[in-house]
Image (cartoon, rainbow, N blue to C red; front, side, top):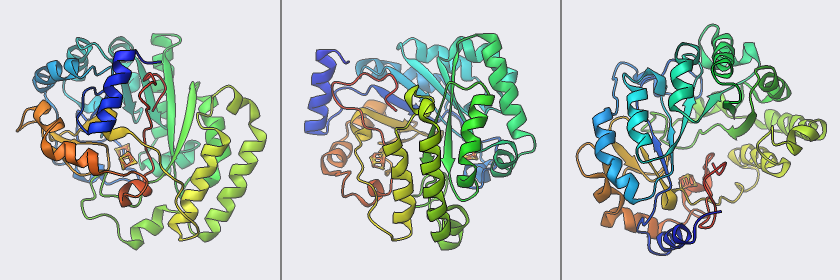
Length: 350
Ligand code: SF4
Ligand code: SF4
């Protein structure tokens, strides 16, 4: 539960479009990535290294404190490739905030001691059992390195929370039961699933994807039928994993993935989206671009303008006032919404 004052501020934000509070911030501290995933073009821009300097974060600290930011999610590229990630975390801690690190897992073994010291929890990307994961990541021994990284975190601090996210796509949907088994085998605390994004300009594809690229990663009609059956088998056979929350989504939420892939093929409507991301959070990319979420347009650049002015510019307020997530064409196809209501605390809400 949230405090009454925070609940009021969030209600005001929803009503007016002005951010009175911003409990969550996603930072992409570094633009490069050490994977070469099939479904992402971020790594194709690895030659243009950009990163958010620790000093820049220090300059934003008072804004984050004023807006009551409680949770910073470090996303990427691979945040562990940043030249001073743990210094940056120390600055953020002054806010104070909880810090979650999203990681490919390849560098976790190397930095395990620092990670458990400066970060509260880690979410690794897990794309399949070993051969499927390695094929999607396009990196030899990616699974093995991920496994060693998770083990190193658990050895450095027993009980340290490490969970996984799995992006379902053509190359791994049939591996679904093995992915859950792999998550257990790796000693992870939880696994969650989302559908691959093929519709937006996020992930370094400013012009979006054409049909050829979409067909490489989205499910075709036969895949969609098979996926539905695999999903139902998983739901029937993994009652304990749903009850304990090891699989983060409820069966109903997982079935939305099946409906989503069917809708991409023109078979039915996209599942309705409920999302408050632009009213409770912002994303700052490695080049300073500030967005209301991963997928919506830029509101400004925090390297060129004061962060507070960007977040509550007339343009940003008008954007929030005019955004209807149920009808907006980007939102309707969104694979990663965030629905944090005014009374909800941030723990486990993403
Ligand atoms: S999907 Fe994530 S891990 Fe894979 S290349 Fe893109 S940023 Fe890197
Ligand atoms: S539904 Fe998706 S695209 Fe729309 S505001 Fe939420 S996160 Fe952004």
